[in-house]
Every structure is written in structure tokens, then in C-alpha cells.
Length: 274
Image 1 (cartoon, rainbow, N blue to C red):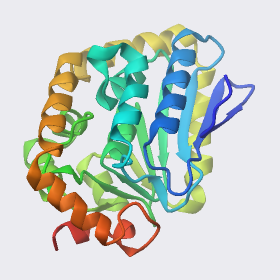
Image 2 (image 1 turned 45 degrees about the vertical axis):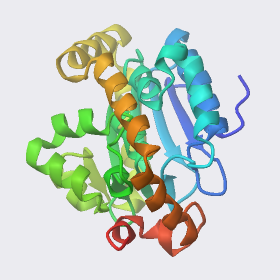
Image 3 (image 1 turned 90 degrees about the vertical axis):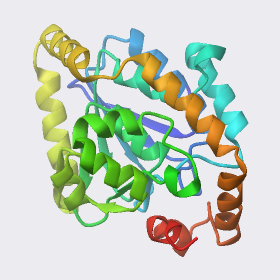
């Protein structure tokens, strides 16, 4: 397939590099969702790829959040992944988690909201120590996370820390995210590429069926059921359209939401000032 927002590079070791490049700041919009639906479909049936490394072309933004001006459009694209009944990012991310290939998120810059949830859907997450920022910002705007954040973080962080992350809606640096279990490791930026490349090649070099079987069993033990993602998506849709959320989002747009500026760089802090 030809992708508009993804740059794909194959290696002879069975590793696929996927670089998200959706200017101006990698917001989740219809073009990026359309490409991710296509990529997931290819990876479900392909045999050549064993490990996928997902990263961003933008050093400041892995994926900051969804494009709030194009919710209907990206939801329509997400519906192509599972039909009208599963027209949510959460179900698309769930399909990503169930792929027979191993997925690794390599995070530089900000991964917030559905961007954090995209990283959480990957099998592993490694982040640049100096510049990675993670956050589940939804409650700060008036709605709960709707694409897997609650499901994954409750299992990874435990009840208390998941409450802190989700209800507080603050930004977390890579060192704290590592300590909490949000990411596997915080790695110095200068070493991150080599570290992830070595791990990806190592996993890809092992017998494929052994890797796939181990991943499948681990998913059976730890991956939330599809119905949990569907229920979260419904709760998110109900509250994100309510008056309280719409008022807060309108205020954020007036301050520069979805533009490259101080609001987006410091969104976790600014939510507390609304």
C-alpha cells in the first residue's frame, strides 16, 4: 500500500520501521487513522515482518492527541477496521495489540491522550529520557480516556497510580513513567535508536512461531477483552460532547490548542489552570 502519513522501511532481519509523519504535529486525524487501518490490515496477513518499530518524525510530538476538529472523519476511518459497531480508536488500537507481529513504540516528545493509548497498545514502549512526555489528558477536558488508557494503565500501574495519572491529567516525564510502569525503560536520547534496533533485531532473529505463541499467551493473560474497549469508547463519546467538556475544549482552542506553541508543549500544566 501507499501511505500518506507513514514512512515504512524494511530491513532484511524482518524488522519494519514505521515513522508517523502527519504535519503540523502528528494529531490523530482521518489521514493518519486511514493509514494505520491499512497498516494493521497488512500486518495481520503478512509473513515477512516479525517486529514493527513505531516512532514519530517530529521530535516534539510522538502523537499529542486526536484532532478535535475532525472527530467524525477519523471515526469513520476507524470504522473500516472493524465495521460500524466498532468505529472507535480503542478497537483499532486493540487490533494492533492482537497482531501476530511484535510492536515496539519508540517515543520522543509528547504522547498524550489517544497518542499515549496508541503507545500502550504496542507490546513494548521505550522513551527518550530527556524529552519524552506522557499524559492521559481526557479527564482534564471533561471525559474519561476512551481508547484503552483506563484498561492498560490500571493493569500496568496498579489502582492508585492509575488514579493519579488519569484523574490528575498531568504530564509525566520519562523517568517517572518508567518508575510507574507506563513504559518499559527511559533511555538516553542518544542511545534510544540503537537500543531499540538491537532489541528488535534480536526478537526478529528468534523462531517466529515461538515468538508468536509467547505473545498470544501473554495477551490471553494481560490484554483486556474487546468489550472493555467498546464500553470505554461509549463513555468517552457520551461525555466529550457534553456541555462541560465542550466549554473546556473551546477555552483551550482560544489559547492555542492544536498549534505549535506553549499550550501544546505544556498542556498537562495548562489543564489545571482552566
